[in-house]
Amino acid sequence: MATDNETRPEDGAPAGERSEASAVSNDTPSDSQPMSGTDKDTEHEGKARNRNAGRAERKREKMSANKRKKQDDWREWKRRKVNAMGDSVEGDSKNPFSKEEIESEERRPKRKVAVMIGYSGTGYKGMQVNGDEPTIERDLFKAFIEAGAISKANADDPRKSSLARCARTDKGVHAAGNVISLKLIIEDDDIVDKINTFLPEQIRIWGIQRTNNNFNCYQYCDSRWYEYLLPSHCLLPPHPQTYLGRKLVELNEEYGASEAVAGRMADVKDFWADVEEKEVKPMLAALNPEIRAAVLERLHVSEYELEAQERREAEKTAEEKAGEQAGEQAGEKVGEKAGEASRPTLVSHKPKKGELGPVDFALRDVKAAYIAAKRRYRISTERRERLQAALDEYVGTNNFHNFTVQKAFGDASSKRHIKSFVVNPKPILIGDTEWLSLKVHGQSFMMHQIRKMVGMVSLLVRCGTTLDRVRESYRNIKIAIPKAPGLGLLLERPVFVNYNRRAQDQLNRPCIDFDQYDERLEAFKEKHIYTRIFDVEEKENTFHAFFNQIDQFKSNHFLWLTAGGVGIADISRGDGKAQDVDKQLGDENEDPEGGEG
Image: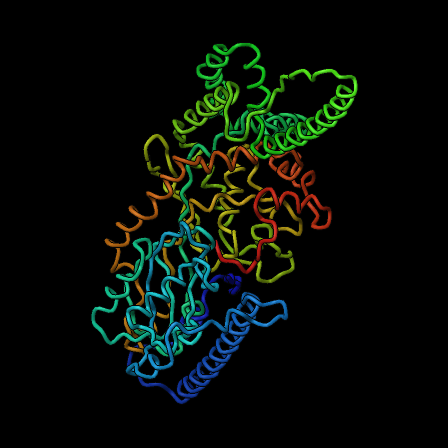
């Protein structure tokens, strides 16, 4: 998949709005007073300037459109699958219909349209069609064919229908509203219902609007709204016994920032002490000393470390067993020669993976107590306001090269404009967990950008770090910013302000507006998006696992959260350690053109 790499002017105003503002400022007076010869000359000069400005604006827009088309063609070429000889294998997909079926089909006119859709990304590998991979567009295209909205002759390649998408959402990301543009056969009045019958319930078409023939939803989109749902317990500080928890205390004290950090963390300073005293200590006291010691040894170790430790122990056990078998074979030969019978030997085997012992059960219960305590947490006003202050640091045009993959500081496409980033002051309570709704409005986003933005502000708040770290991340330095789980991200809707104005004033076409589908859209969000997010978190503890991994990451990568700052955590792309952190955090071998969000 490709990502949205369009860059806008740094003032953040779309070209259409700037030209309109210019036109408004040059309007002639509305009164009917007679004008002198000088006034008439001035009027003619003004009209000439407006015509020239209009031609220049149209020329710039045409050049911009051509540039974007070249970028899209380049991304499409990179995305295609190739064989060992370098030839495309995706473009040669076989048409599912026979030659006779294609020739016998009635030819019907196609119209350029905008299709407003919503979907749950669970189980899909993103939005954009990619061969026969499970993507949203793959299932949409099949439904269009089944419903007769795409002819049999065009059934073998979406490009024949001029398919484009407004936002290329990443793997697992949801969308309450998104738009695709293409040429469809829409003669049937019930075409929307027909198409929906061939789609799974987690993909819905809200409406289809006629557009002008040149419409491209990606190029005409002014901005996008995304929502991120975050459990409020993600803003709790790291446990004092974790690696990050210890480093925060150590380095904040070393750099003389302990008192300032304590002031920012005053509302949660006793959280972990209370959990330990009231819940964990009684559980540990009930265990026998040997099991208790084993539990304490493994309690604040990340799953990644545990797996590595288990692999080392398994390798060691295999080596010891091989040595014992070799010794036994040698002993058997000696015994046979001496006429002695071999004695039976008791061998202790490590339980196979999946088999739990007393230590595993005790460890599971203690960890469950920690998770239950976190879920009972309710955010304070002070902590929510600090989160909002951190989000405000993103507003404006900034260089987000640290918030995506494989982007250099000097890459112009790293500059993005954020219009607003707001946390809803009223949290949502689902079961035992309190959730925060964060909504971001921006002109365009790079791959993982929103998830890394959420990841950074969450870490800043939970660690009591100064908010100037956000501004420092825009500089020509490389720091490790983990991406928050994709589980909480959804595309709210794209915005088409300038196209809608033109559609009404000049084209006599309907607007692309999701408001008319609000009731159905909200019901879909509740059933297929919010419910999935809440259920998955309830069963899998995705957010708990994510922050636990960060807290136990034994490296300097995240020490920019301490008073030591980015100076003790700067990473170079050539040191090997950067690749290690990318691998463990899931960014290794990521395609920067893979999708936005």
